Length: 297
Length: 290
Image (cartoon, rainbow over all chains, first blue to last red; front, top):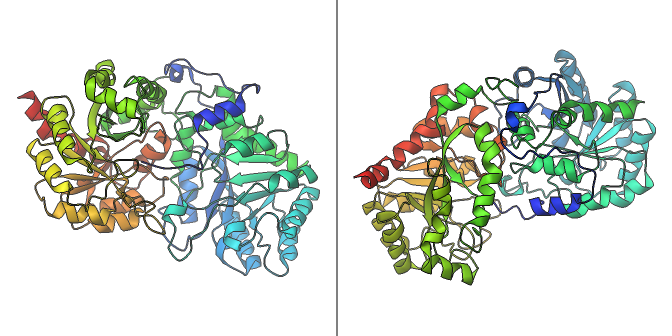
């Protein structure tokens, strides 16, 4: 039996959402499926990565294969970081390769990596925003060895916000229980985001692979800039509960492919029958569209 | 939508029906079924029904607390011992959908042997589950297991052992690893064992049981990490893999997604999703019919 003590329980999620405007149409019967309109628009996957994970090969870690699989599932656009960005120190080279790969496979939108512990990270950031004209950047604080209290992180948030771009924080890449023994990496402590986002009201942050915790959701509900994805939110009704607990429009479809099987998060969005058609469409694409367009506006 | 249309990420309803999905690891209200013996468990089955129907599952097997000290609730343990009929309500409510196994307590051998007679020999249960956590957890390398395994084999029951290989080692001494299960299974070559969660860290778990032909791996309990099923099919063969949903605490997406999203033949998917588990249950189902 799993022991996910850090994951928010259904009861906690319900408690958080008490009194909040409901985004759900709670289905009384499983027959809700018969009435569920499958969204006709295409899907945006806000959380994929390209290239190779150093500890394991994935069946879809060839870009062409990943593109084909995502398209077969109805995904028309995927925001792609780079596994190389987690481990390499020539980050400029990592980001150039990512841009080149995305040009070859236009379903992917490149999201550059920035490592705030490296000298000259500001140049990498400027190249992402300027030279490559990326819509956002991705950071891996746990793998890069810093906390969100690092001064440079506030600086990054500020620069990205001023440029109208978003920041993706990879809260985890892999379950801590299954990581390589030589490279154990705890999930990112995101609690410093609460005071930071109060100071940086224009910042937009997408938490990748985050498992909801009631306390944090309560703290950030009134803050405008925090978004979640579906990749590692588990439990049959977990995504509808997160949609209800978070502020409206804050849950994006993200699969964490090719590390995870992309069908997993996609099925999870609708399996409980608790999201109405409109809200399901928000999760699968419209929230991501609004998130991105808000940045570039 | 039209009932013949596939929902996002899922195969068509007809293909799902053709798989004839039998779920070997259904965990409604896993830690406690409710003080009356079943109400929480029934509520969690109902919570799972949309996913069960979306996946077109035929049957699901859950694990019952039967008063062997597998919960921490003394009142419940007394109820389970004195009013065992109170535990049967889930099976009575969904007789065509649910199957049951009992949670055993390796620390209480005599009581567990009595429970085997009551619930497997004379009752409706089809096998046993050895937990990896909670008050009854005991590593399957412990000698207490031998008497129990022998009796379960006599009754033709199925044995499910919770297993994990965790980075940094065991979090409690009662946990079992796939390597420990392989040692136990080697002593009983005629008995089949299910290695629940394939060890969690499946790359090690699959290796640990690879040379144990009487061990099948169960697929639930961890993220839908890509490549798991492909490796398991390559190293064990599809006949040694059984599907588990871990609903409702895990999801249809995570657990069914592992199988339907894998790059393996359709025939292998059918075996994993139902056929292998039906084969495993066949001896005890046959003995109960006769």
